[in-house]
Image (cartoon, rainbow, N blue to C red; front, side, top):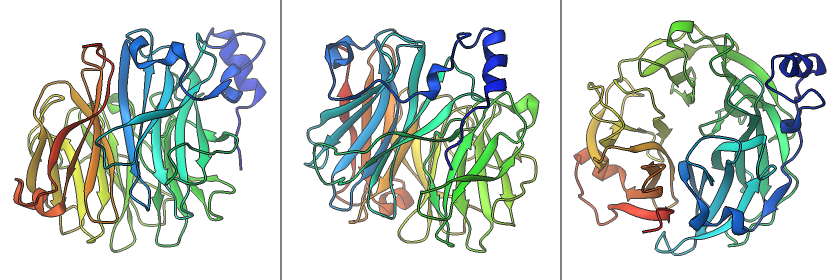
Length: 376
């Protein structure tokens, strides 16, 4: 079902100055979805960051991120969609999602996902300001992800909150969204589930992040081999975890995981081999800053990790997201220097390279450029 915010909540928000008194404009579909215009040109960007990447069944690469004409995360933000049909050698921006150009609404924190129906979902958050409780998760279905120019339907608001990480298809064939009403609410790291291939959605449960550790949940789900669901979330101290044994209905309160990390997004996903891939900053046991982006693999459902392929050691790299393609190559997008160099990049490699901690196949390609808005 499509969830919206009750009018009483909107009136409360207007009373405290978050929303204009007359309406809640972030509940409306974006005013512009189409080819980039002058105002959204790459030469007119002072901010670029927070990417996601997906690969079509035919091998076409897709990347998304959000940008703006000011060097801030503010009302000027809009979402960009870019694609490559030659393995990432060249990229073309084919779509922007801009709610109202100069605000007050912003689109941000986008995600890309190839669903089991073969369609590409471009997903974004939409809100006024940064309040996770009143944001909304929007889906745009793209019919043929192998085509360069996307053909899409109307955008739909799926649920409240923000979804920073990829959905998960459970062994029951249910689709699960990691949507969060971050910072302000209890049980904010929620699981939103569809049992009819995305036609309707409902909240199944949510994990509580202790108030003193809450930041931007940016949580991810992993279904373990015993069918329990492992939730990992961003906290002020790094990465917290919780495990649900009833398919996501109930969750113990989040506690610190054994994985050391700064307060930043990380990436975890099951590979075709059945092993788990983790992309994070620095070694497993060491808490670093936003540098030394590394990939690890686990053969025991996340109990231990091995390898450690260095993707980019520079300070200012962050927000990994990606997908393994049909040929077994893993592609991970990330950003670098959001307001100076303003680059979106990606790395390509195989599981064997991760396990070895070095390039042992000819698939390793690092610091590949998707977008450069630096003007250099």
